[in-house]
Image (cartoon, rainbow, N blue to C red):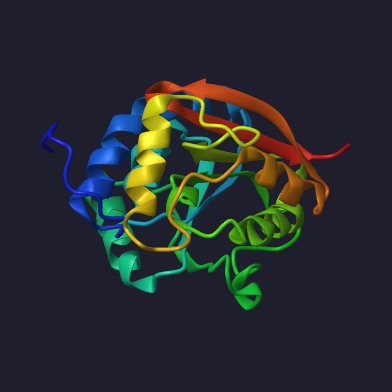
Length: 218
């Protein structure tokens, strides 16, 4: 994998997505080691894409069983191939979960099935409207003390936290795709509140990103 930044391409199997994933996986692993359950449990990844993250993280958590999901079933073969390549026996087959389609929202499991859910680098190329689907899924699928961890670049209360994030937003916006651009943490908090969740922690990450940790309102 080259260190040179490839051209922007949000397709889950693109060189750009692979490059970005390799940049952020170590800091993310550090957060997951702190936040994921220490006891045996189940973890769902939303928008797994190529499967690079779930296949990188799973070997570090022998006590957890990981469940990939995505709206695009074309990536499922790649997820399975990576699972086989890395001999990850604690990763389930991927399931179809489309956050724009309520009929798929509960394909992943029964109420309280998961102790944690995570989603990486989706909102900069997805409409903010999927936040409601994500939060409703989390409300349904998470155990009472479970967490939803969302990673990526965001605006905070209507402002960019760095010049580089503003430049990234402008680059995304210039592509001419209406939903591309940095979303606001405030909008995620509002969606969470509509579904009985709240932001528990906002963690600063390298490259001006955040890990947002949501949980059920107790």
